[in-house]
Length: 251
Image 1 (cartoon, rainbow, N blue to C red):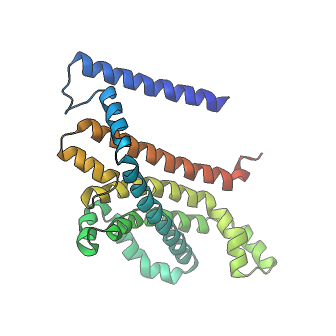
Image 2: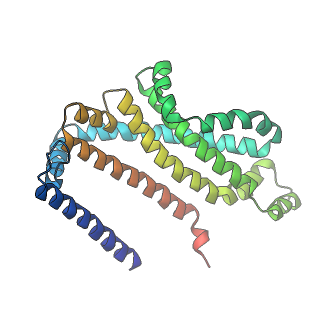
């Protein structure tokens, strides 16, 4: 029942924003190239849906999922390695800190120069945005494991793999999922930015095309689809988190 009322409240808030938006454009007779009305955006969305909107969406989702998966795997593996080896952490903490603080958005043009206009530069940008949040979350999660669980592992003579599989990884999951959620948002931003800068496919390219041709309603429609994609990705991660961490809700 609580979820039902939450949906009602969210729907009402969105409807109020759309009504206010429509009234503003009508009352002040705002030019469409500056701020199109909701009806114009809706019509542009329907027209794009009859055209190549879904092919652009599928392309964005494909590179988003691919880059996100690689970034997550590398982030978890690297976080585990740093958590397990103090020497490796001493060697790599400096370079990692430098790369983490470097603005990835500013590095995007370099990725295009180094790896070209194809899929590779887009994937590398997404991976670089996902990698660090997942790495830091995994590192914190592994190091936050209760000392008593380590003692229990020694008493039970668990191997390193058994210790990771049965104790460390499950205990670190709450922190890892925080990194996964941050990385998911970053991945959407990276995918759109990469398509914006290079390529002829994807929602980012659609935004560039709409901007260059002054099709502002189409630009708004692409932004709305991108926002819905970001919400969908975030909700999927949240759903997985509830599935894997269902024990947290138990009394």
